[in-house]
Image (cartoon, rainbow, N blue to C red; front, side):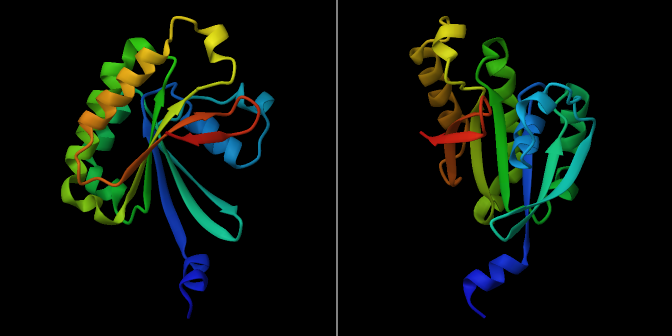
Length: 180
């Protein structure tokens, strides 16, 4: 059996994790094809919500982790169980929530420590979410220097042996990711 056929028959587990109000659920709903108006009524994720998604003949099992402090602690306590058989982790940081950058970086560090050497088979992406097209107009205080500092701090938190990619993402019109 070819590699492509084997991949098409397996379901890949993807975890969306980060602080509350970061946009994890909105990204998942956007990937499912829901429009922005339906996203306004989404409620905060409590605990973990799972769903299945098919994109281009690939099957994904999406795990959306609630980001409130009480749930973050539980996720770390149940880490082995929750992260078992994970193919990809997407850590979402609300780029517009500058006041909580340190909290987001601390949680990211705790996750990477829990992963330890198990990262070999897991792809790891960081989404700098809410990098909307009109960001410089709506948030002129959020300068390029501040964003570059955040990216530098992220790179310092992630161990050098972790395969990772950092993207600026937005669901302003449709979900978009730009490789940094």
